[in-house]
Length: 242
Image (spheres, helix red, strand yellow):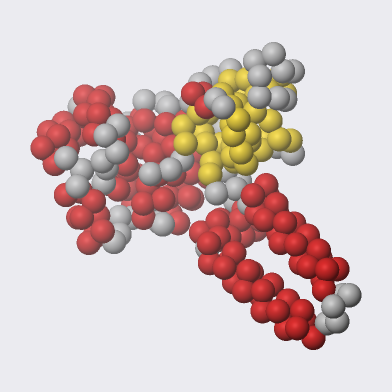
């Protein structure tokens, strides 16, 4: 296993005040023994404890980083990327995304490509509520002004145009700007063309690939895969969310 210090240099730990607060909330009575085991290089034992703490929705960014490091040493790219993505959510550390891209490229995994479109999508996801509020204001104010100036016969047509515009914008945000992603946690996971085990198989993918969620139906998630919209069982993936 690589030297921990070298690995950490790629993802510098910042925001110490936030880290300290989160660490204090993460069941220190369990984390301290796990940290001791980690320092003693008893990684699998420490991972078991970290996982038990994480399952109770308690965590610290440093704990997430250690879990990513251990899983990388154990040859588990899916879990490594999962905890790195969670670490990025907790810290907004861009270095974590560089590490994610490095690992995903090494194992030939999809869904992690850093493109201008992805950067724009991440930015829009981050500020989605504010963007929607601004958009609503931009639509509302002009429509009121125009509505007051228009004659009575034109008002119904204007209302229809505004309604279509709002529906189109909301449809775009809900279907093309995904705010949720998942990572496949099993090899040979089936992606289906419909939300049913009897639907045609669209693809069989391996552990670690990332998918953007655009909806859900019962136990099925509606996800984007390459250029298609397909379905995957919810218990076959790990949601990238804290």
